[in-house]
Image 1 (tube, rainbow, N blue to C red):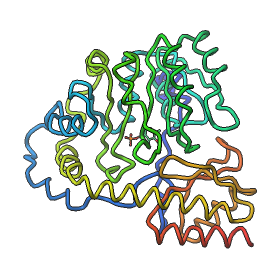
Image 2 (image 1 turned 90 degrees about the vertical axis):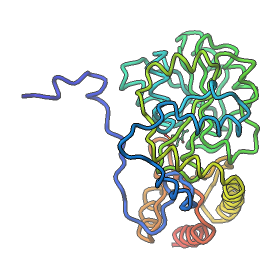
Image 3 (image 1 turned 90 degrees about the horizontal axis):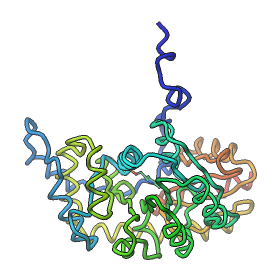
Image 4 (image 1 turned 180 degrees about the horizontal axis):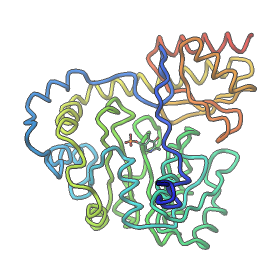
Length: 344
Ligand SMILES: *Cc1c(COP(=O)(O)O)cnc(C)c1O
């Protein structure tokens, strides 16, 4: 029996997300935090394994609402923000508009759900090309626009005025994906939620030390939350993740300390990489740095040979690799390795 023949055409042409583990000593490829919250794991002893988790993740939402200065009914919880991207597209449908290069899941999920995609190139500074974005909004009438700011993989924030122009021009929902907001010097779009009913903010705990838990959040008008909540599967956030995240979120001083170190290390990486011949790093508001080299495949391979895994973006962004800020010793080792490779 030919199974492939039964699969929807959109899905048949997709490739599974490549999550193969490449063994390495220093892992700098996935924009994870180098710092975890081991003490928070003690909280799992309170979990009753025979009971379903709280379907509304109420404890977690209350904590987050307080931290973000919003109401709990402004928040919807996801099994990672990836799942909320899925729920948003399932709720509103396409066309789905996004600038490229950007986070791949907007396009992948839109395709998986059989929705039309519209991709617009960023300008030479990796900022929004307003003219093209506004033209695409007029022509395609997207139900959803996804803007990752700071953008993965370029690292920059889009200019706030350009994002605002997109929000104002769009008759659909505009999602500002702020996965990297904790590392950014810009204030982000949460303060504008009350002014724009079509604005949705995405946040995640994955980049600040809790990637293992799979926890993301959508912050929006309660009416949007209510609609998207209809397609969310019940119990999407498991009980272990709920209690561990709640315990970790209470460690505010520790979290702030980790973020401060990561930002300082990102800036140290940037200025040190800038001094290595043949390496062009781009400024970053996130926990990673995009950089250009002459022979990215060779640099990638030689780094891996020295035990360091980065992300090879050659193809999506010609000549480019992406390195996540690790611990200070990891970054020092990375700089030494890159320096040596460029000399050879
Ligand atoms: C990492 C990332 C996400 C996914 O976060 P999860 O909460 O782990 O699913 C979403 N958006 C962007 C831009 C990211 O880089």
